[in-house]
Structure formats: structure tokens, C-alpha cells
Length: 254
Image (cartoon, rainbow, N blue to C red):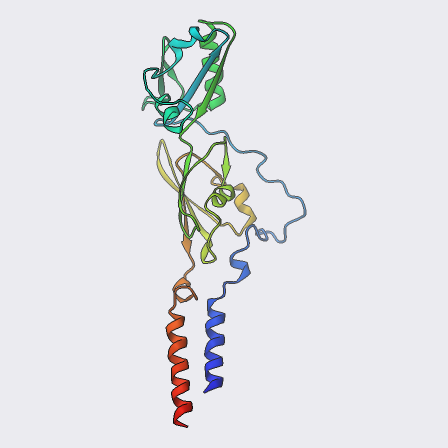
């Protein structure tokens, strides 16, 4: 009976383990082992502004009084330095791809990068005032992590680009029972919603169009198919207690 108990215990421990090949990121490529140095995407693609995006435009001049016409929502009684203040003082891109800029009117920004928009607005404002500096920021860069993530949720990104591994680190990494071969990046664009399937175990992910995330992306990580039989999900404590009680009864009867 004791041998049977040990055998069952070994089976349960083996069943609760997850192979390292299922949790190691960026393993061998489809063409064999990776070399010490391989070149993939050299840089992140520039994000193109879409309808619904929010742009924060800051115009500075030697004489601050001259900038009042270019300040949006100046009557809003909220600190501009706060996230809510920046949002309320931002310009939303319309369905036609424009923002309504003071004195100037509609400025077409869809399909342009933040730096291209910044240069366009700089040229426009130079026609009104000299010695000005224009700064443009995209303020709605949020990504969501769902599924087998230690800390799922929606995260604000305060940088120009973010790759999928950096996004996962925001959520405290994936759980041991995450299926790293089955990760979905749900992305919305002008034509609709696209779903990109990525494999975090393969080095080929570095060339994937979903390697660098875009504002509004949702990253969903599926669980391994055998998660229901893992140590955390199965009521092993009850099973151990039952087996121990049975062994005690048998020993007592003997």
C-alpha cells in the first residue's frame, strides 16, 4: 500500500510540472539554432495617427501671453500636469482625420506620425508668432493584458513604442500555465479589427507585425490545455488526506 501511495504521489508531482520548453522565450528559430548575433527588425515602425486618437499640443514662446489663442480648454479648472488634465486639454482626431486647432481651424493629421504633425503645426504657428516651440504627444497609448498574466489589466504607456515583451513585463510576466505558443494580439484599425497570432517561444516573433504594439492593442494569452490537471487546480490536499486516512485505518486494522 505504501508503494502504491508513493507511486500515486510521483504521478501527481510529474503531472503538476510544466516543461521548460513551454516557458522559455525566444527559443531556436524554424531554421535551427540561433547564432550569437542575428539581425531582425532594426527599429519600431512609426505609429500613424487614426480617428479617435487624442493629441496633446503644447506651444511655448518667450512671451507666454502670445500663446493664449493656441491653448485648448483654457477654462477647464484642472491641473494640466495630471493625466485627466492632459486628456481634457487634448485634441481628438475626428472621423474625417482632422483636429480643430485654435485660429487655424481644421488640420488634417490622419495617417501622419506624431513628429510629422509636430512639424506641420510648427510651420503653421510660425506664420503667427516667431520664436515658438511646438511639442505634440499621443496621450491615449494604452494596452490591455488578459488571460494567463500575473497582473492582467490596462496599462498606460509613456513612450513612443512598446514591444510585446515590455508589455508582458508590465503585467509581471506570464503564469507558468500560459500557452506561449498561442498569444493573440487584437488590433483595431481603419478597416476593422485584426487578430495577430504570435508565438513567444520562436525567435520569428521579432519579425512579426505584432511584435511592436500599437495604442489600444489587447494581448490575450491562452492557458495550456492541461491546466485543469495541474497542481494548483486539482484538489490534491483532499486527495492526500483521503489516502493518509485510508493508510491509517489499514494499519490500525492490522
